[in-house]
Image (tube, rainbow, N blue to C red; front, side, top):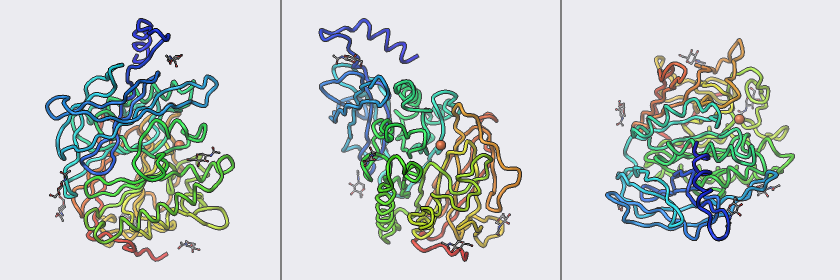
Length: 438
Ligand SMILES: *[C@@H]1O[C@H](CO)[C@@H](O)[C@H](O)[C@H]1NC(C)=O
Ligand SMILES: *[C@@H]1O[C@H](CO)[C@@H](O)[C@H](O)[C@H]1NC(C)=O
Ligand SMILES: *[C@@H]1O[C@H](CO)[C@@H](O)[C@H](O)[C@H]1NC(C)=O
Ligand SMILES: *[C@@H]1O[C@H](CO)[C@@H](O)[C@H](O)[C@H]1NC(C)=O
Ligand SMILES: *[C@@H]1O[C@H](CO)[C@@H](O)[C@H](O)[C@H]1NC(C)=O
Ligand SMILES: *[C@@H]1O[C@H](CO)[C@@H](O)[C@H](O)[C@H]1NC(C)=O
Ligand SMILES: [Fe+2]
């Protein structure tokens, strides 16, 4: 619908240079550094002289300027689009701002966002999911509803976005980004890269989002939100080595180790006790037809490279006291008992294995939608599989305070019913806190 409107409008806006498409579309937000900053990213099909966000608490009286990047899709048409990125600074924590993006060549509609509260002592509410798709984005309506009613502080999309960004000369990417605008223009939409983003060296993914720090391309980075430090990394580096080599695996690994060391400095971990990591492919899962991941004792993300076992990520999470790890890729939801090296390491409280567990907790949440259908499960599960469902849906997480994290799985098939719950309790968080004797 959006592209039809654009087409109709643009046929009447013929400039001296020919057709001109300078209306902003695909507006979305991302976090940068702290509550005083927010980044807006959008697309125009022709270049504009300026990239501007006008914003304010009462009216659009403030201005932030940014940059325009020219992006060329790798498809046969070599379609060109212009990515605009503006970092808004000097925001007041805990306030709702209205804003629009563009320039005198065209403005978006007026949207709003709420800045994070100052400091680290406030409950953080997240929606987490992967594998949504442009076609059959089944959870999107519910996510739009909850987001616009102010239920989330940020969204984590754990890879596999549009199916695929580059399809039809990236028109599917445009359609997807326009669909998620009703979520992503209101709350920061933070990402991890998935296998469906691989085309042309992940260039659509790298260009369409603006993630903070890390490699500067959104493949690996971290950010803070309230009492939480979130680390996003690429599982895909491990799977496309024939095409792109393995240098990025090492770069990412050493970057992540340094990042987690910094996050674990006592003064940092005291302020932000929770560390959540995410990457697209799971280390633990019990789906059929997934010989690479589920049940593969040599799962490359988990144990690292064949033979040498270099750059395995499970040991990294364990060593640096990562509390919770999200993945997707399997089109289902699965909660894993606290597990390390294929061994279940429950906490000692019999009523809740997630009460000070002896190993990190893994959640697979890849059932947001998409046109590939859901992923059925193996008839017999693994000892570490606690709960699974192949209903479409998404995960809600509330990080209540320094000790309590609540997680629930929403089923879209069952009209928003919560089909699973977990309370993760952690009295003290630090590197080396796990004690899973394997
Ligand atoms: C957050 O609070 C601290 C301490 O009160 C203050 O120094 C800082 O300026 C505040 N930050 C913002 C963005 O208002
Ligand atoms: C505007 O974009 C269209 C579509 O990419 C392109 O055909 C046209 O040449 C561009 N016009 C200008 C003035 O750059
Ligand atoms: C792919 O992109 C990475 C940056 O993410 C770059 O370092 C690498 O050189 C690129 N590889 C190829 C083959 O284009
Ligand atoms: C994991 O378990 C295997 C087999 O039980 C053992 O050989 C290996 O050393 C363990 N790895 C780690 C990192 O503890
Ligand atoms: C972990 O806790 C769950 C739930 O109480 C239980 O079913 C499972 O057997 C426990 N596993 C181990 C190894 O203690
Ligand atoms: C955190 O919240 C939980 C659940 O509401 C509560 O029981 C606990 O006492 C709180 N912990 C701290 C340190 O405030
Ligand atoms: Fe995937």
